Length: 129
View 1 (cartoon, rainbow, N blue to C red):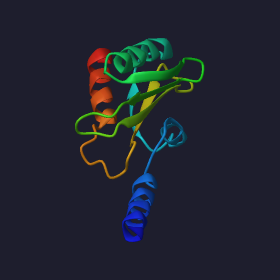
View 2: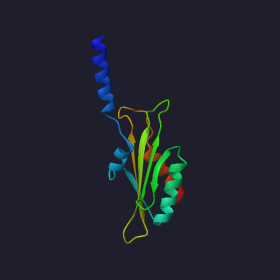
View 3: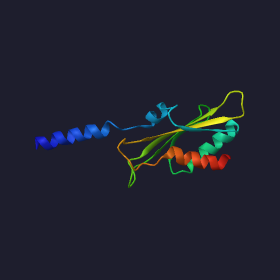
View 4: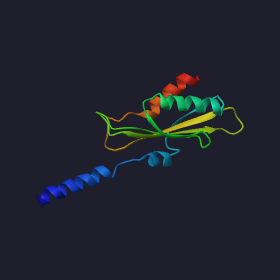
């Protein structure tokens, strides 16, 4: 019995050590996939917000002033869920806007999780180009 408890504790520690949260995705700004669009900030913001809301992700927060959308997907048949941060940044002295998307698996060992960064950028490309 003690052996089973120790194995369960060890397994729990391994599984939980690779977990992410929305703040993990938010704090990973600068490490995601990005695109630069030849559009003004408001146009890109509205498109990004719409793409995220129509993607099936659950939007936790959306702050146009900060240029940040935080969203998540829940557990499904093939995933433990994902945390997604979208950053929209107006580039200085140009009519260009950068969009960066960071997608983190809730459980790092979840190999069947969606690549939200590629999917969202592809939909955003279609909307803005």
